[in-house]
Length: 253
Image 1: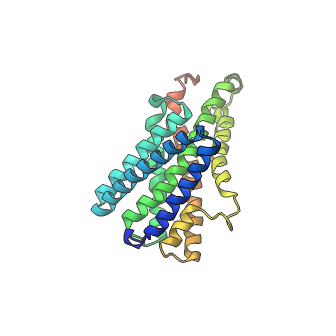
Image 2 (image 1 turned 90 degrees about the vertical axis):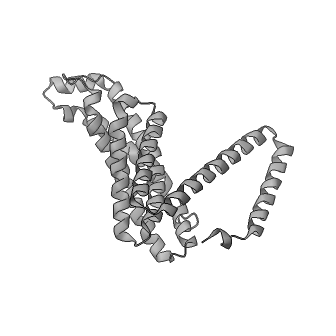
Image 3 (image 1 turned 120 degrees about the horizontal axis):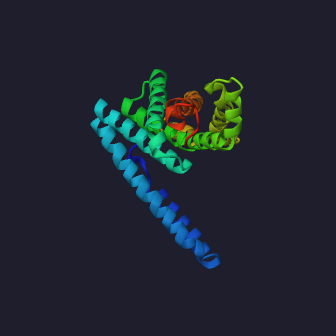
């Protein structure tokens, strides 16, 4: 679908309906108007920047442009994840960035095997979905992991004193973290899909993909999102372990 295929009558109707809603709040609850306008301005500016960047990447249609975009998304999402989880950049950023990039690479690579879509288009769409889900999933998982270690320090020391290995001592916290990584994904999945299909599914239909093919792509992508989020969480825990514990095995974060 091109911009020339969009009917501006539909845009006009949407703007009119939005104006009616704004008028309704002007009469009933004026305090919400400023928030509505701020959100609209943020979404509009964000979509404009996103469209411009993706148009540039797709226009270049080069492996180095795709690689730069993957690196940018991976590094930016890692920063946002740690900021949302309120965790140390020094201890977690490099392990998390490597883990997120690995998850994105596995997801995009697997989708290459599934569909013959243009590489730039596939990278942009798949990474957008996977990175967005990682933001909510991995941030909650890492926050849960560190919080669990802080609140179970005595139990951790007790297990070490009784002959448990470091891996055995941290396993309860690892288990809680991996469970937490799936909770946001489950919440987004258990909606009644017949009446509320995923946005990615609807986007595929708008791109003239058949309903059956769209369903297969969305189901495979869902599995990739789950495994990428869990894998990124576990890999981050493994890589960040040397920053969280000292040489004697004492939790220092």
